[in-house]
Amino acid sequence: MRYSGGMPIPVQPMAIAALVALVNDWGSRPAEVGHREKPDADQKKSHVADRMHAIFADPDPAGRAAAVTAILAETGVRPGLTVTGEALVASWYVPRERDALLAAAALAVREHLAAHPDRLGVCHDRHCADVYVDASPAGHRRFCSLTCQNRSRVASFRERKRQAGG
Image (cartoon, rainbow, N blue to C red; front, side, top):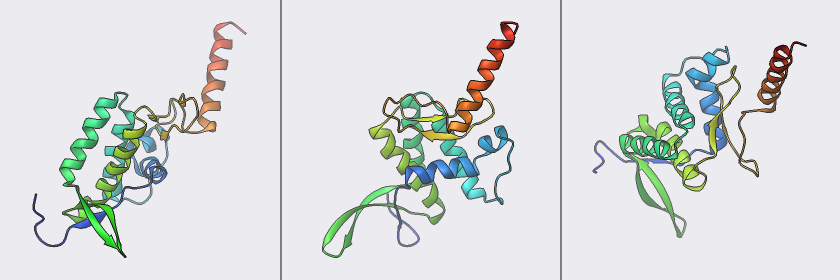
């Protein structure tokens, strides 16, 4: 692919923690389920957050891989080399500035999925749709935070108690 209209735009993969924050702060689904307002309207961030939320929500690693690959193709991400001092550094480029944020997010997910395909998820609490990255030793995380985990456990306990008649 040729870059038309000027110089290609350098892109670095976003830190995975920054991606989680972007999705949870700007995503439509986390705001809707959590009954909270998104910050001031930034269509670009909301669009990227919603696209990434769908990847976190997909339980199938192959589906996640296909979605990330499609985004990378859509944004036109290309590898390259950059000279810094006397060293060559692996780099990524996109042809359009408007695609830089989406490409940075997709590159972050790409790197994470390559190493840990089953360690992304959406909170299992029914009052939350925030995403998380599972960094637990056992790899069995199901909630975005201890608050959601505790809320879910208390609700389950109360439901069992109610069904038992006490």
